Image (cartoon, rainbow, N blue to C red; front, side, top):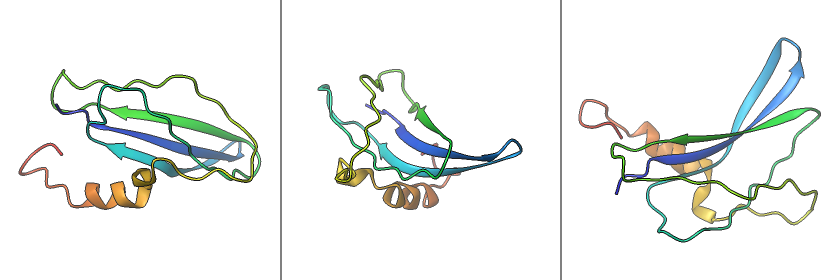
Length: 103
């Protein structure tokens, strides 16, 4: 089953003409049929938007669902699951070769 990937970005709104986006959480591939919990620590400065992006896989059989989103102010939030580290997924995307497949 080809699920694709789910990514979360934080867009900082600096001014009316300038924004910046940071990838803060990313997972790729199947995770099973059960609902999973996830946590994404963010540290915005000022106004911000949270962007949730799902990229479908090659097949219609892979589904991604997001439910029960909350934003909490806490000191103890840690990335969960730990493999959702955006640096890990970014490295996997860099090694993608479109000549061979669609990643």
